[in-house]
Image 1 (cartoon, rainbow, N blue to C red):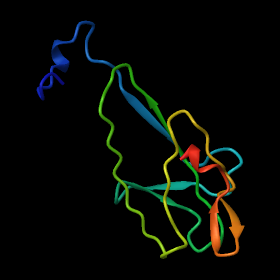
Image 2 (image 1 turned 180 degrees about the vertical axis):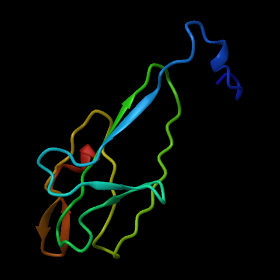
Image 3 (image 1 turned 90 degrees about the vertical axis):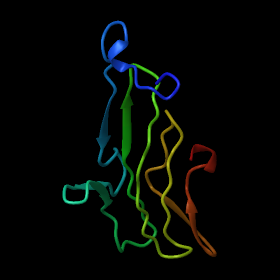
Image 4 (image 1 turned 30 degrees about the vertical axis):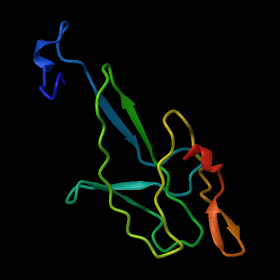
Length: 113
């Protein structure tokens, strides 16, 4: 973009290859996500499982700077369920939660999210 105008066709060397892949279930995670083709969203596979987490990885392979927009829906039970995004290039815990006296919290350091 140049002052709000898409100039991709004018780039020397052609259009950059900006691609992504989704790892539906990362190694050591008990639950992952399944793609729902009718909605276009990935859906967690741990619905109804207490103190669990579904973990996926979004792999971004960009040859150029660009704006990335992630659209998501988070249906949750108040004070129990939540969705979190990890920082770029930072793995997050695959076990999801550590039990606490008043519920549960991420077993990983919050600085990774």
